[in-house]
Amino acid sequence: MNRIEIEVLGSQAALAAFTRAWRQARAGRKATPRLAFGSIAELFSAVSEKRLELVRHVAGEEGLQIRPLARALGRDYKNVHTDVQALIELGLLEKDERGGLRAPFDEIVIRAGLRKAA
Image 1 (cartoon, rainbow, N blue to C red):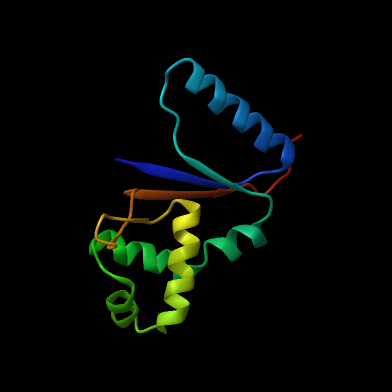
Image 2: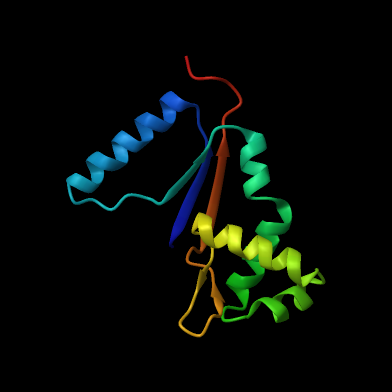
């Protein structure tokens, strides 16, 4: 199963995660793809409920263009286009050679700690 982990991390934890990933890559080991945000607000701004719904729809019906996707979701084309562009920038969606959309991951794991690390 191909998955991505999305986390809320403070600057120290983000630096530690980057260091671990760098060491894994240097050792030739495959690292799990990750996205990190500095706050819950940043996470929910970038990966909103509507955007997750959009990714889920694309994962179930890959190859859709934006207009048919907007119709299927019952949403405005311009808003869906904006969301698709943001999700492509995050790496949560990709376009195929014909411009159809695909979800590169089978699973998205979102993790946000409740307490600050000691």
